[in-house]
Length: 229
Ligand SMILES: C[S@@+](CC[C@H](N)C(=O)[O-])C[C@H]1O[C@@H](n2cnc3c(N)ncnc32)[C@H](O)[C@@H]1O
Image (cartoon, rainbow, N blue to C red; front, side, top):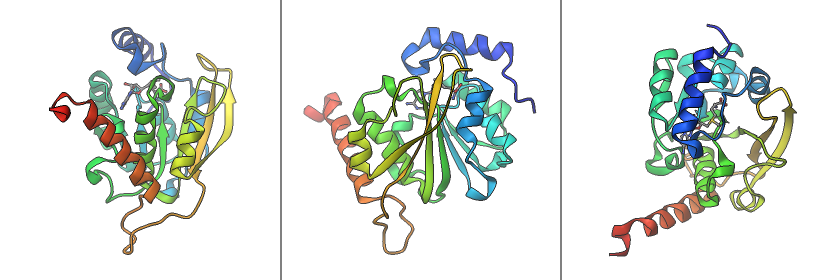
């Protein structure tokens, strides 16, 4: 499989941005240099990988180039146009069309803890409670030593410090590139302290992650019209 982004990918990406600029939040897919930075620490021995907001699959291809088996990939994409394309391109991967903010709900992926999360989500254009739900939900699916990789076009980690502290996480900048439109930095977010896990060890979610998800769910309920009735 080619690792190159095709001309039609640029066209599709640009069209998606025109139709939903807040969701897509970039006019072009990420470049190969950024894709390498995002996946540089991920090894096949680390376990299955969860990708959030893969778009046309630039980071997905970089993961495959690092030797991750396609069947070890779960791709969460909200855009229908991208989800359809991803299913055609990566038939052995699990492609789920859903809002990444719902990751922590229903224990959807609790049975298969991931070794790493690679996120292309536009966190800077999301409200803080949604960012908390995404990051908390992602860590609920991650092994204790698993890491969450996120890029940003901004000067600092796009997960606010208050959310990191609330979830017991730390962020470290692991690289950046100007060979991207626009230039981008990459962060590794990992657990700062040992987890409080359930007695049988099957639940990889910390008490802080549970609390953050519950807070988000409560706020979401309050926003629903029927909740106030
Ligand atoms: C900035 S683009 C990045 C695409 C690709 N990772 C790349 O780097 O070229 C953001 C992607 O996240 C997806 N997305 C945005 N909000 C989402 C959400 N709440 N849940 C899942 N996917 C989402 C968009 O549809 C889009 O594919």
